[in-house]
Length: 89
Ligand code: HEC
View 1 (tube, helix red, strand yellow):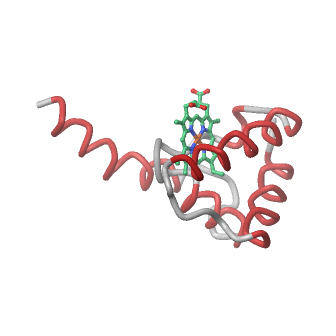
View 2: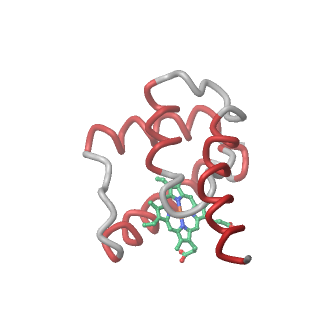
């Protein structure tokens, strides 16, 4: 049961969230939605201010390396950063 629930959350969570973020059709918004929902539901950009996002992105990069999850390219990181900077709290 718990596994079923997890599967449902993993399937529906990210897509349900993606429509709730601002500018979800922009390139940065799309990259954010794709890369940042691989391991957990997509966090709202309003959750943190930019200095905290910057710190968090470094941490997430580390998590991706640890788990061999495909990392965004350098250019994609730049776009995700720009997106979060624009929409941070
Ligand atoms: C490889 C898996 C993975 C990916 C991909 C990933 N994260 Fe995470 N994230 C984690 C883990 C694991 C945690 C739990 C905290 C920790 O271990 O650092 C976490 C925690 C978080 C938190 C804190 C949640 C809270 O409850 O406060 C935020 C915010 C976050 N991630 C944002 C992001 C963003 C933004 C991206 C995209 C750049 C991203 N994550 C991509 C694994 C991932």
